[in-house]
Image: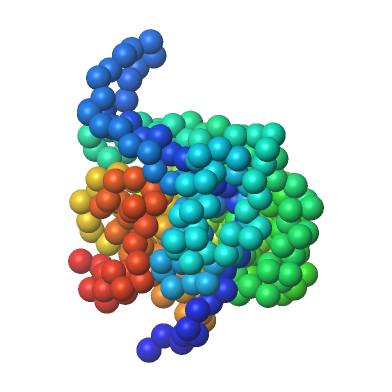
Length: 315
């Protein structure tokens, strides 16, 4: 039986975007024009996705970020309200438009993404400090890197000083400053992101394991690394040992936001006191469900569906 509280408190400092999704049989080559097969506008942004994922997974969520004063900003704040997420720290920025992402999804469900941060890049240390009380009382702080690195570092510092658990999803892939990693309890990269951190692209589970080990050696304060491997599940490297947690088998339609579903669900499971490996299984189930639905926000699953898939085991 898992140890639970009713609603673990999750604070998310991160990006809010409007996703413009184009579907095509394949991605175009350089200089090529293709006819697409579909188009949609979806609520997105890694921070926003993870906040919604955490709320649907069973968390009480506070979102800290920025949007523009445009219609995209209206839509994003409206969605947060409908999901029951505290958006008092989501500022309206009159000088920058809301962030956007341009996403191409091919017939196999794989995607390529260009993100234009806009208001997300205008997030300030003052914004974080104004939300410091909310960060200091959360069970888990969830961070990504579609906001300035110094802002993520400030949020991590506030949470660490208060003894909160800090999870960093280092996406999009880029080098991460030592001071930020030093304030992180759990790092959740995928294979591309761990390559950006170590300089070596892992090829398969053994190589990903070596890369994760090297990170924990290089950054002594980093307690746990969870490498997400898509259809191959996740690798967990922690003081308790090294474990490969298999994925759940599903038919992929669109992999957009799968990592965000994983991170949001992981944060909730840890926030309510589940053991690390059970929390990763909960995250794996959320990630698996998310790839069966097109779009970012529409694909983020709810707690009942996640629990049902986790209970089925790795079929």
